[in-house]
Length: 253
Image (tube, rainbow, N blue to C red; front, side, top):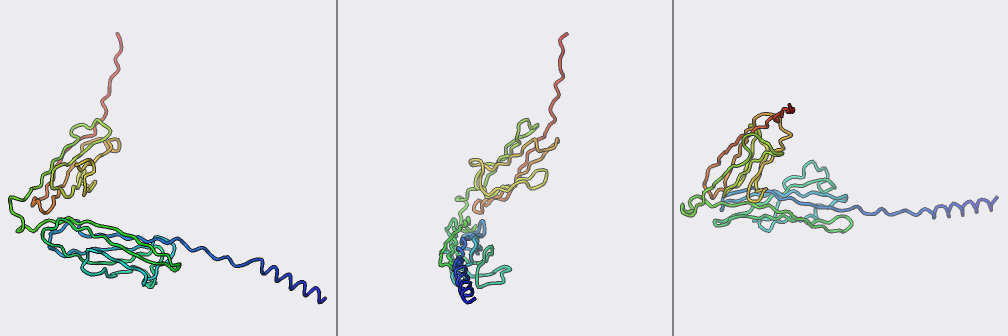
């Protein structure tokens, strides 16, 4: 009986040592930052930039390891919001924190490119760095620009008019000193462009097959850069999606 107990105990020990604990592999860390601010401003103004740091991975970053910087800012960015985060000691997967800082511009500057950078470390000692930039166009104060130096804004609208016979109806804006073009179709906003998308032109393209038969009025609201000292203007054109013309068959007499 004693031998059976000893054998059972030995068997239990062997079985226990046959299943060692398996260490879980660490997750994949991820870190991202976006920078945003005013699209345009007047040189000499104090500009505020917003930075959003997001944990895009599966491991957490300690708040004390996160370092957010913007070289162009007057002072280091400050944390302004952790959203709905209930664990502010760590930036957990999927969470985003918001930061802010300010840039003082000066007369004569034509733009500011604010670049936000973030560095953070996770519990496994892995350190990640990410960056994101935003550019603000700067115009000069009205009193600082002599009238002879002003290049006024100019916009032209061309495109499909009359009966749209091709696959696409097109409206295209070209010109100079253009900051933004907003296209409208029958009074409804269709597209906003802050940069040219067809060479040097701002283009709206509509697939005619997706349109109902009838008349369409296309408007283009053109806004110019501040230094052009030109008021926004709206240009329009009109086209129609026409019904195909029926061709009557002819019969030989």
